[in-house]
Amino acid sequence: MKRILVTGGAGFIGSHLCEKLLNDGHEVICLDNFFTGFKRNILHLLDNHRFELVRQDVTLPVLLEVDKIYHLACPASPVHYQYNPVKTIKTNVMGTINMLGLAKRVRARVLLASTSEVYGDPKVHPQTEDYWGNVNPIGIRSCYDEGKRVAETLMMDYHRQNKVDIKIVRIFNTYGPRMAPNDGRVVSNFILQALRGQDITIFGKGDQTRSFCYIDDLLTGLIQMMEVDDFIGPVNLGNPDEFTILQLAQQILAMIGSKSKIVYHPLPSDDPTQRKPDITLARNKLGWYPGVSLKTGLKKTIKYFEDLLQSGQV
Ligand code: NAD
Ligand code: UDP
Image (spheres, protein in one colour):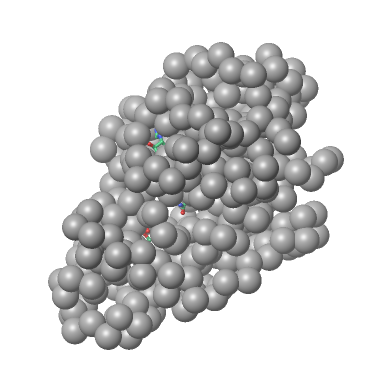
C-alpha cells in the first residue's frame, strides 16, 4: 500500500484515478481547488478511511508526505483554460514547480499529465513522441499548450538537475462519465445537445480529426506508466482510431436516435486540423493499448449524461 497524491482529483480523469487507486488498496490524497472539478465526482469516496480531500490551489506550496504524485491539476477544456489564461499558465508553471519541489523533498515519484496539445497543429501524422510540435506561442490556446510544454521542461530539468523520479504522459482526447457538462468539449457538447434536441454545433466544416480514448483505457495506461521502472517518457496515451468531428456527430445522433440538426459555426483559431497518437512506444514499453471502441465508450457516456439530466443536475 502506498500513499498517493492526486492533484486535480475532483476532476474528470482525477476522480476516476482516485477511485481506482483506492480499489487497488492505496491511501489517496486528493488535492483540488474545485475550479472545474465537482464534489459529486468524489462524494462516494469521502466515507473511505483511506481517502483524504485537501481543498487547495496547486499554485500554493503544500507540505505532505507521499510516495507517489499524479499531477493532473489544470483546466483541460479550451472554454475553461481560456476563462483565465494567466491563471492557467500559473497553474502549469507554479503548480508543477510545487509538485516537483514536494517530490524532491520526500523522494516521491511524480507523473505529469501532459497533453497531445504539445504537438500543436501537427505537421507529423500520426504524432510520435520525438516530434517537437507546431505550436503558436502567442495564440489563444498558448496558455495551455505552452504551459504544458514548460511543465514538461520543468519535469526534465528537475530530473537532470535534482534526480527527481519523473514520468511524462501525453494524454490525447479522453472521454467518459464525469466529464464536466459545461466544459464545451466536443463529446459532452454533442451528447447533451442530442439528448436535449438542440442543434449540434460543429466548428468549421467538421473535417478536422480527433482520436478519442475511453477513460478506463487511459487509467490503465497512467497506472502502468507510474509503476514501470527505467522509462520516464514522454509517452503518448490515446486511442489511435481517428474520426472526423462530423463522423462523431453522426455517430452520437444515431446512437441517441436524436432529431437534432447539425449546424456549422466558425472554427476557433489555432484549432488543430488533425490529431492521432502513434502508440508504438506505449505498446513496447508498457504493453499498453486501448481496448474500448468508440461505440462502447459512447454508450456508457451517453447513459451518464442521461442520468445527470434526469436528476436535474444539469
Ligand atoms: P478537469 O477539468 O475535469 O480536471 C482538472 C481538475 O484540476 C479539476 O478538478 C480542477 O478543479 C482542478 N484544478 C484546476 N486548476 C487547479 C489549481 N490551480 N489547483 C488545484 N486544482 C486545480 O480535466 P481532466 O479532463 O480531468 O484533465 C485532467 C488532466 O489531464 C489535466 O492536466 C489535463 O491537462 C490533462 N489532459 C486531459 C485530456 C482530456 O482529454 N481530458 C487530454 C490531455 C490532457
Ligand atoms: N468542436 C465542435 N463543436 C463543439 C465543440 C468542439 O466542432 O461543440 C470541435 C473543436 O473545434 C475541435 C474538436 O471538436 O476541432 C475537439 O474539441 P475539444 O474542445 O473537445 O478538444 P480539443 O480541441 O482540445 O482537442
